[in-house]
Length: 136
Picture 1 (cartoon, rainbow, N blue to C red):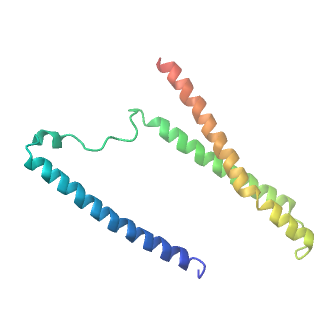
Picture 2: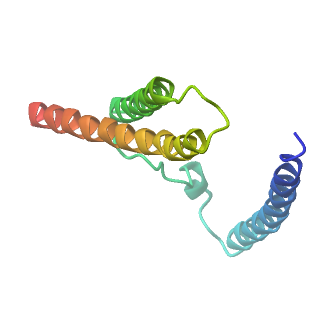
Picture 3: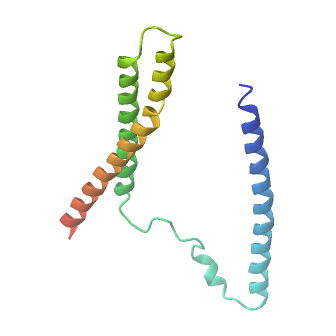
């Protein structure tokens, strides 16, 4: 727990710095809108949404397929890393062989997570492509 305290303090400090900067930016944006109103801008413009959505596609099932297959791939990769780790662990703790094995196996966790996560995204791509061909 003591190791997490500096990270938490840094996160809180940066969060408050971000919020203060955001406060000044919003104030400037509001002042700009007020100036536009005073110069005779049409109020009908403000009836439309100011921010465009990031996802222009009406079909949101594509994102659910991507995120679902990504999480499935990461979970499968981590599960396989644990299986490899438990099946090959030397039984005698404290030896140099044991520590070398532990250091080598520690690479498996992120490697399998990345490999199978990427595999999940590739599968999602092919599913999307197949759906797009059907739609055309």
